[in-house]
Image 1: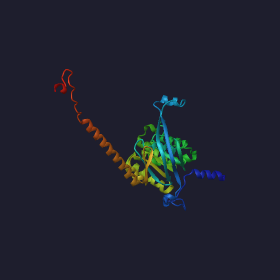
Image 2: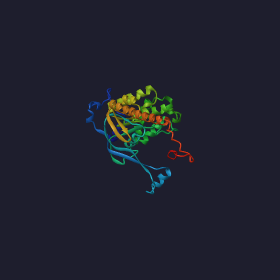
Image 3: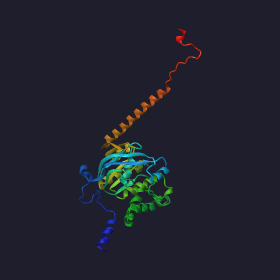
Image 4: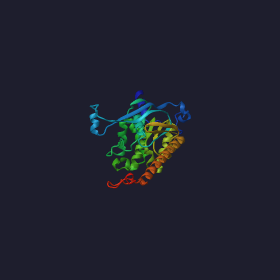
Length: 316
């Protein structure tokens, strides 16, 4: 076989590492200080705004005329942060805080209105359990389909398939149509694929929070191993601080499209939960004030004198 063909065949096969998981002479990524690791995600004063039209018809007309009225929605405002190789970072924020917008810009689904985004490495995202799956194809066929969508070669897909099948552990269901799968089975297959393509950056939404306890523990072990052995960077988007505490070492907190906290996971959880408690206390106080105002009887106005009744001055 020619040398170039031999090299291509070797590249298509999964690399076999020693028992420790490291290539000979390699320095474990976790042994390198975070500040000395290469940058994989960087936001430089990034802002994203949308035009919100009152209806689809108005949105269509707005493509041809500037006279159509719309409202500016600022989903992200002046975001600046850096994530380095091997970091495991949680992204906190209430609904509407701008988390999904950040993920869309990282994965290339959306682009910033202002600022610059730098992404170094292959991104694998597990944001929606059903995304990229054809319900009429079997689980095995969907593995091949998603591999083709990602631009993998036939050799790479062939090497990838048994790894995904083994981790998903769906048994005979792997060859059944996905319309017969439960949500838990879809999450197994989705995470198995996303974490088996050797991504440089793994983005996970709430998918790690579903499924049975054993599967969540299995996911956690794989994520930790990926970060330690391969230097994979994890961005975990969740509302569950307990799950984030198990997976992550750092967190970003978003509020109304702005970055309001960036620090160690325990400090971030204290800030996020304390902020939520403060908001709930303010809301409860306002609700109590409104309820008290509604229950207070309105002062009775004195009845006006009758038209034929003399006034006090006339009586005097």
